[in-house]
Image 1 (cartoon, one colour):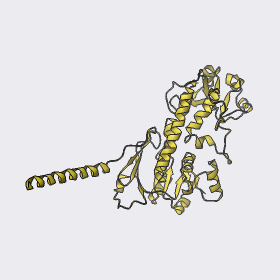
Image 2 (cartoon, rainbow, N blue to C red; image 1 turned 60 degrees about the vertical axis):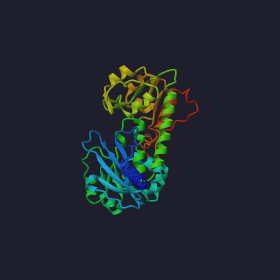
Image 3 (spheres, rainbow, N blue to C red; image 1 turned 90 degrees about the vertical axis):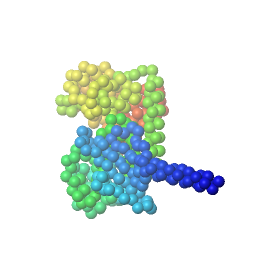
Image 4 (cartoon, rainbow, N blue to C red; image 1 turned 120 degrees about the vertical axis):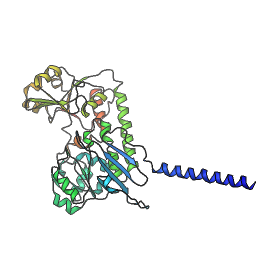
Length: 380
């Protein structure tokens, strides 16, 4: 009996030892990536810190960037091999510099504007809470993105700079990094879908220690967007849409795989160039645009124009389009902030649900008859 009891104890010890070992191994595994729509970054949770990997900081980037974020209230000692990461940041960040107006709405939504201490070209910011902080000199002017006031940035000593770059050739960022100020590249603008851009709020959720709130905000936006998309699909007609305008002698319009074209597709519109390749802009001749778009029902986003008078003064051929004649031209250029910043460029990437509602209201007014457009307005 004694031998049997000893054997039983030994079995139980082995069982619980294996169970404990298995639990420890499982705790060390990174949690699943919590990014569902964005293609340019990933979030991986480790046992005591979080890793964000930015794979598309700019078009055709040859390098990805990995950043480790360690909560300031972590009680256990955290050992991180800093050579494996492009930056190691303590969160939540309390002193921050961002460089694109598309970063502002995420900070505002996550109650993080108080952490923002500097911005290049503050005149382009439209957010009223941010403008109030600017007026009180709590958000300092830092020059422009291509040539930041490095002396002032070094004096501020921010915990991180969220950088916006079109390539890796940015001597200012390199200088600041050498001075010990981490630069985190944000590639929200390279995303190809509306919800992909909006999901970058999760990047700031990690930075500000507001991950749950960022997830909740994004989920609400995504759900609203998909509801409007489903509503648009029920429309009885699919109106034909023209977009773009002339710049000098070239007609620039969204390519078929672009962010703007995706909005039109989800709004159940027959966009003229929906079947073209590319995620940027098409370069067309006036003759080609006239040939294909002369009889379209609607004209969305005619560049910078806000009135029919200005359009015709710029080029008399605009008056040949049906949408011009029937006064069905709509622009976001009329919606500006108090200092002239274009609200669409700042807020639309973060709130694609509002953009889609605007377009559905314009193209299918019977579906959203009482909706007041947020960005798009008819030309004067």
